[in-house]
Length: 221
Image (cartoon, rainbow, N blue to C red; front, side, top):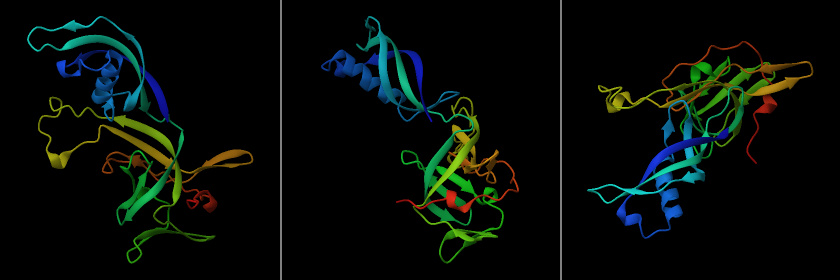
């Protein structure tokens, strides 16, 4: 789920940071620039891991800032294809289920990619899966698991998408995932495909007509 990415960049240290220790100032500026940002074909940057190299600072005429060539490693969130993730149901509506990873809350499972024979209870505001072994009710706060199927990066630079409006906001990083994987003595089976995405409006895969085991969806203790 997390990986280390090596980057090289010239970090700008404004004059008001000169009172800090040089290394602390560099770390603060790197985190300010990259943390909680999505890098195309890299992933969601979490924070700085360490600094591998920093060169001599050059002060630019006019603004008085110091520019430091730096090589460093970032902790990046980018699940690999086939990885199983665990999240908690945050809320449910007729359109689907919202799931949280704890540090990221914008995960959405659209209703079209839930299990076959699933029904939304309007009064209780929760999803119910009707199967041959009985009804399985999903409740807010329960833990579910899913497997990453594919990923999509979108460049949201205004120069790339100049006519985009607030209503047309596009997610920079989207994951398509399947539900719980569980093992059978001789082979691996999967639930029908569901989807995890920064943007719930994007598409997903079709259902696979296989019946999952209900005890894989457990309550949070």
